[in-house]
Length: 94
Image (cartoon, rainbow, N blue to C red; front, side):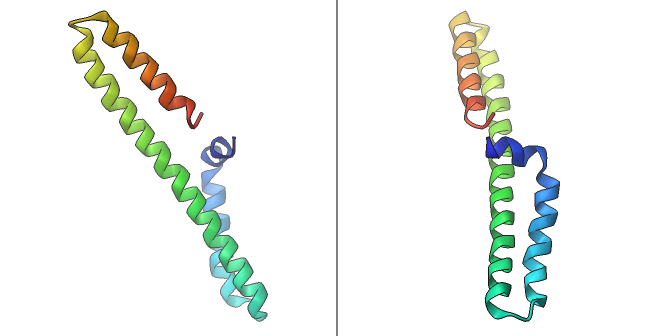
């Protein structure tokens, strides 16, 4: 659920994370500065992780489809197995 929300609005989270990480440098209070800076970097890390996972999932889906299409020419069972793998792969994030 959080991953889908981040994928939908990732540009906003990226901008907010950068603003918080950099903005923490200009706060005179040391404790508040560290909290804001840490929050910004945490948002950036979470956004990068979700975007990386999405990219890896898309690449894996392409590879599975290509390989299963080759095998499906020989036997229809491979096509069914490939469809199941892609469905389970997409079920993890979406």
